Structures are given as structure tokens and as C-alpha cells.
Image 1 (cartoon, rainbow, N blue to C red):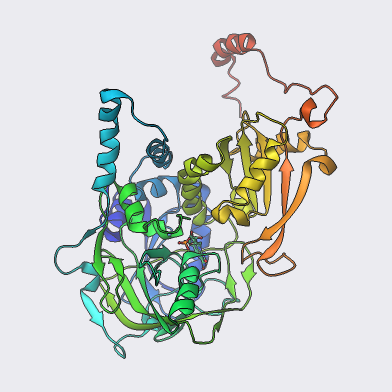
Image 2 (cartoon, rainbow, N blue to C red):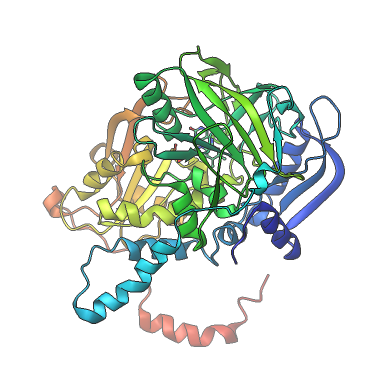
Length: 495
Ligand SMILES: Cc1cc2nc3c(=O)[nH]c(=O)nc-3n(C[C@H](O)[C@H](O)[C@H](O)COP(=O)(O)O)c2cc1C
């Protein structure tokens, strides 16, 4: 099923019993977050929530409802991306990047659907006036504090927009980037812009300052079709258009429109759009604290100010949000989808990778399990060094490498195997490099150490001279005999 916008997706969630409508008034000041956190921690991720009567920070009621946890289960995340299972997209990408030249006519014919799929998905301009510009509010006509933006944790510096699509362009090439960066609402027409230094938006701001200085146009779309809403959280290589990627996921073009005040392209189906600028010559401002997805507060830091000059929206907008905090919350599924979808791209550079997994307790950058097909001595170290040079994987704090027969998505199995296989002094290595800006433990902000654990079976070519034991496994023959016997034993039925 393909959804054209957030409201279609919400209607589907409602129809299929995956959404709970909260009809009581609920305050955006912590109350909504507490309800959401409890829902998100239910088995499987809990339902999506639709708060019909948000109460704003000043105690008045908002007529804009809040949708939250819309991506917060595997079923919803997959539906948002137009598939039964996000693995389907991983398979499509693997197929697309297969480096093979078709042999003969039949081979070429087989390539055609692949190429046709790509030509079908580039973004297309929306015909007519786009829904996201039904209402246009110019300077002095809007007040961002009237939006139902949540303050999520007690020590937070204020309310934060948490599910935005922040659109910027490279000043030299004009190529757009869309990133999901939280935005603290500072006042009626300003917010913070929390693009961390390793991210696309921050790169554009640096390039802008270097080449032109002054005001860099920035447009923030909130809401849209659910596949496009996910794309700014994905670590796409620079230059790869999020709208194209959104279209690829949906198997249908994303409909776009031109922002009113900037030469930037926006999703026509957004709910709310904030247009404005970041002045690259303006001093940074204090942003935070913010209860972050690490489960700790990110303390006050200096970030740019986003000045909003125009707000456009639908006539009856819905405000989508997410809640981050102690895992597990909704980003388990947003990040989990990224993990699955991007595996084929990691394999392109490091082909011995069989699978990887970033378990929620490691909040993505703290812990990465990798299984590899080991063909030569020391390969586990080659893989960890490769990963530390690969895009945002460079921020990974601990990488644990195991052999191909281990299911890294079963963290019990992965830890058991790795811990059994290591001699710590021999198999654990420390490295240094950039760490996530949110890492509160590194000695210096965003620069610190990394730990690589070689949990693979050791070889004599690696200097290991003792015999290596087999893992315990029952013989297939006995397993088959017991399979036949099992249903008659009644053991499954014993409480
Ligand atoms: C809910 C959520 C909130 C996020 N908030 C931030 C943030 O405040 N700052 C940031 O730099 N990255 C944040 N991220 C991660 C980025 O969206 C992610 O790294 C993405 O790849 C950035 O896109 P870019 O590579 O185009 O910059 C967040 C991700 C999610 C899922």
C-alpha cells in the first residue's frame, strides 16, 4: 500500500487497529511524553497515538492534533515504507547495486524492469497548488509557540520539534540535503538548529559561510508521506537526493513543490512548513538541555538559530512528533529500518560482512555486532577498521566481530560466542577517532576512543597453536528422530 500523506497513513493505522485516539486534553508539557513513553515501552512498540486535544505550554488548547509513535512497530515501519517487511528494500537495493554486466539479449531483457523501476521514481512537481501551502502566514502572522510542540523530559530547555525534515542546499552545486535534526522552539519565530557537525546540514552551513557568508536559506517540512518522512533520518551519502530515495521506497514519485521564499524543493504533501534562514555570521545560541535518545540528557551546547520568516500549512494540519529517551522507543524502528536497508551498501565496500546489528541498548553508535566470512588472518581487524571509515559508522564506539555462522541479531548468541572466543589482551584493540556528538563519556567532545573486539574463531595462522573446540551441536539424525517424537511428548503444553 502506498500512502500519499500522513493523514492517509493515520487513517490506515486507525482502520487496522494500530492507532489509539486520545480524546482527553493532554498537556504538551511532559504529560504527553509520559503517556507516549509508556505506550512505546509496551511489547512490540505499542500503538501509534493521536492526541486530539493538546494543551499548550501556556495552558490553552491547540486545534492542531499530535500524531506520535507512527513508526513505532515493525508492522507500522514496514507499512510506512510500502512493504510487508523492510528486508524487501534491502533485497531491492542489493539487486540494484549488483555490479554485473548483462550477458546476451536475455540478460539485457532481465535488466529492463530494474531500470524501469529507477526511471519511475524521481520526484515530480505537484500539479496545481500544493496542500502544504493552503495557508500562508507571513512575518508577524504566526507564532511557533502556538504549535503543539512537546517538552519531553523535566530538565529539557523547552519544547523541541523532533520529526522535522530540514532542507538545505549546497551553495556551490545546489544539491539539496534533508536531515532530521531536532529544533528547540526559542520563541514565536526562532528555533535552535541541532545539526551535528558530521551531518549534511552542518556541512552546507560551513560551505555557505566559507563561500558567501550571511543568511543561508533553510526550509523545514513537518509531515508528508510516511516513506519520505523517514528519509531524512537515513545516512544517505552526500548528493543522493532524499526525494529520489523516498520515491524508490514508495515505488512512486514523491510530489514536490517550491518553497515560497527560498529556492528549495519541499514535499508538497507536508502538513506544516517553516521557511526561513540560518545566518552563518550570527553567533551561535545555547541549545538544550535535551533528554536524548542515549537515555541521558545532552547538556547545553552552542548551535545556530533558525529564523522563521514564513509558515505555510494545510487548512487542518496534524503535527507529527516522536519521543526519544531511554531505549526502547520509536527510533528502534526508524534506526532498525536504516540498519536493514543499508546493509547491502556496507557490503559493497566491505564484502566479507554477512550481517550486522546495532541493538537498542547500544543506542546505535555505542555497539555494533558484525558477522563476517573470515578468509584470512586478521580479517576481523580489517573489518572494524573499514567500518570506522564508513560514513556515520565511523562514530561506532564498540565493534564486535564474530564468524558468519553467528546470528548477530540475537545479541545473546553474539555475546556468548564473542566472549567465549576472546583472550582480552590479544583480541581487544583500541583506536581513536570521531565519536557521536551525543557521547557524554569521551574525554574531549566528539573525539574519543573506540574498542574493537575480535570474537572470531582463532586460527593457527594468527598465532593460535592450541586445538580450537567445536561448538556443541546435536546430530541431524537425532534431531530428526526427536522432531518426529516431539508432538507426542506434550512438553510444549506444560506451563
Ligand atoms: C528522531 C530522530 C532525531 C534525530 N535528531 C538529530 C539531531 O538533533 N541532530 C542530528 O545531527 N542528528 C539527529 N538525528 C540523526 C540524523 O537524522 C541522521 O544522522 C541522518 O542521517 C542525518 O542526515 P544527513 O546525513 O543528511 O545529515 C536524529 C534521528 C532521529 C531518528
